[in-house]
Structure formats: structure tokens, C-alpha cells
Length: 220
Image (cartoon, rainbow, N blue to C red; front, side, top):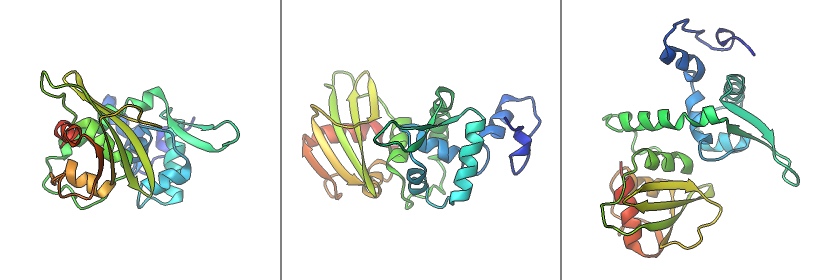
């Protein structure tokens, strides 16, 4: 394993504080963004390039290598017939969702937050998870199948109840109260910018009240 100072553009802080060491591990440009995109699911190199606008293949390769050497990311090959290489987080790496969520809750108060910038589907769902609240007491549990599109569609299952609100990546929805289809840009306008569901270009099948419940529980 390489020494941290040998593979960082700025070298190690050489500081005994654990927070400083955390920056040694994930403080390089793009590092935490790469981690963010792997929290909900494993991805191919091409998937990461698509989901992280602005990152070049060289920079992505370096960040993945650094994160792998630090024990945050693991690379594996899917079984046949897929037989493709994907990147995933270790259990330790996946615990960085707490860090990502804390940063989201902190930065959403910034007056310079770029509200017009688009987000990947996973990034938008992670923002919803970071700010999720339980439904009011006595409100029945609702389940919503959410499909977000920016290029390839990505599916999620959301459950809202007084016990809490959860949103997970899903291959299928099963029995849900509503199904929603939207682009990430339109869904972001609802979750972050407070747009009106009735006027947004969102496809809703089923109970619109369930969708409103999800928005009420996850709006930033």
C-alpha cells in the first residue's frame, strides 16, 4: 500500500487529528464525489463517468486507485454472462453516507447553492435520504416507486411512515400506492426548489397523495 503523502497532490497533513486524517483519505478533488456515487449501488467505470459530469478518465482512474488503496473502494468482476468490472464501497467506505448527509444538511443553507445544476439520480435520492423525516403520527404507511432519468433510468422504492422514511435502490416495486416517473432536473425542482407537483412534468400512476407524502417527508 502506498503512503498517503506519495499519492496526494498536496501530501499528508501529518496531523494526529482523525479529521485531518480523513482529509488525507477523501480530501482530494473528486474523491468524495466518487464515494457518493457508489453509496447506493456498484457501478462500472463508464457509469461513474456519466454520473460525475466534468471528471476526466485520468482523474477518475486516480481517485478510484487511491480509494481502493485506502480500503474505501473495492473492485470486482461480476459473474458471467456479465463478466464486467464494477466498483463498490467496502463496509467502511459505505459508512461515509453519514458524512455525505451531514455535508448536505450543512451546505443546503448556503446562498450560493447551485439550484440550476443537474444531479445524478443517486445523488438526488441521497439528498432526499439526508433530509428525510418521518410522517406525522397516525398517518398510514405509504410506498412509492420512483423512477428518475438522466440518461438511463434508475429505480427506487420509498416508504414513508411515522416510524421513518426510507428510500432504497430497487429492481422492482411490487405493491406500491403510487409510481412516479420524472427526469432528475424536474424531480429536483420539486424536492429542492419547492415546485408544485400539479404543474411539474411528472408522470404519476396511482395515489397522488402518496407522492405528496413522500415530498413532504424529503423536501430540503
